[in-house]
Each structure stands twice: as structure tokens, then as C-alpha cells.
Image 1 (cartoon, each protein chain N blue to C red):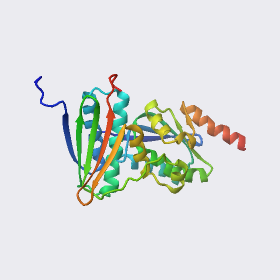
Image 2: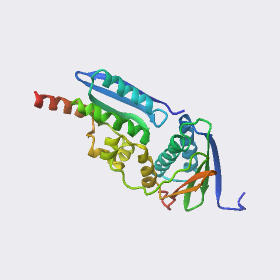
Image 3: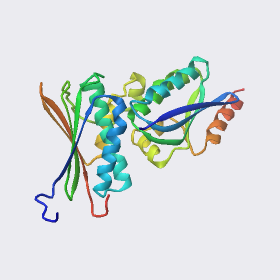
Image 4: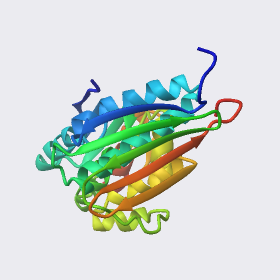
Length: 121
Length: 149
């Protein structure tokens, strides 16, 4: 059985969601709940770490689209990081790199939020 | 065993229209594609295309009714790896599959068309057949090249 799980870690003002396993139409609601939990608590600076994600289908990609608007309206962002080539290729096929910042490491993604905040203050 | 009547190999999976079955569908395709000698990259692409096709059937043809029937028929010969996916739900008119305008999707929160685009992008041939009131079939094919790609 394919499993999927998420965990969240707060690092200062930035929350990182760690994805693990197989993200498809069956498991996408788990990720929706994770995003809802953050957004409902006013956490809009979100990094997603894909390191342990083995698989994604369009149902999983749809979750990122479902939350990005709300997050950006609140001056936050969803930044993606540590994708395998296989997962990146699917995002790339659908044109996601035009709409989302994708970083090689989680640190780079987290630092991007900090830089933006320093510039803004 | 050598005196094979036909070079055409068939295999079949019958499964109910539930998202929890997507993992089993992917496993079935993975085993068959490995046996057919396809490359890792080709297998990944086929698995995703079949997942997208079955997800569309569960969501759109059966509208999440959990006891609809989905039949996957594999037809492999030396040149092509083909999966026929049949359902008995609401028929559907695929129309023209173009590259999705992600910004537009994003504004309108429309995600459904992404799967159809992916199927087309990941496979060498995608064909839809519908007999209204009877069944719908989508046929996904990948060419098997001599280098296994």
C-alpha cells in the first residue's frame, strides 16, 4: 500500500512542510489538511520539502494551486524545495516554475523569506 | 512454450472506482512494464498517465461512486506497450487537449484538465472511444524502442 504523510516544523516565522511517500488523488486531502492548518493559524510563509516524496500526480499538484492565492493575498508564499528530477519534471511539464520558486535546498528557500523580510522592513 | 500462438501478450486488472485503489493500479502497471523491458523513465511516465486516466474516471465518469468498474487491459507486443482503460460511467467528450494555461487554471481553481494534458505529454498515443450508455475507453500507448526507452 502506498502511504503518504506530512510533518511540519516551524523555523522562526517560516513553516516547513515535509512530504513523504506517494501523493495522489487518495492522499491529496492529507496535504490539504496540512495547508489548511497553517493558513488557519495565520502562517503564510511556507516552504515545502520534497526530499522524501516518491510520487506525485496532478491531484497532488492541485493542492499547491488551491492554496497559493490565499497565501499570497496575505503577503506570504509557498516555496518548493529539494525535488527529485522525477518530481521536478512533472511540475515543469505543467509550467509550475513560472508561478512558484523552486530551490535546490530547504535552507535557500527559508533564507529567501528572510531576505524578503529584511528588504521590506 | 516456444511455439507461442501469438506474440501479443494480454493481461487484465478489474478494480472498483476508489482512489484507494490507485496504488494497486500503479503496482500492476509497474510489474507489467518491467516485464515488457521498458526503461525506468518510460515506466514512471506510463504509471503517472494511467493514474491520471483512472483518477479522471473516478472523479468524472463515476463522480466518486465507489462501486463502479474499471477494467485495465494490457496489450503488449514488441513495438508497443498499450493499456486500454474501460469504464461504464458517464461518457465524456475530451475535445482538444492543449497546453494548460496554468495562470488561468490557478485563477479559476480548475485542476481537472491537468491530468489529460499530462497523459498526452507522457504517452506516445492517447485515444478515446465512447459508446454512449455502454462504455468509455481510453487507450494509452508507449512505443518500445530497441534501447528500451
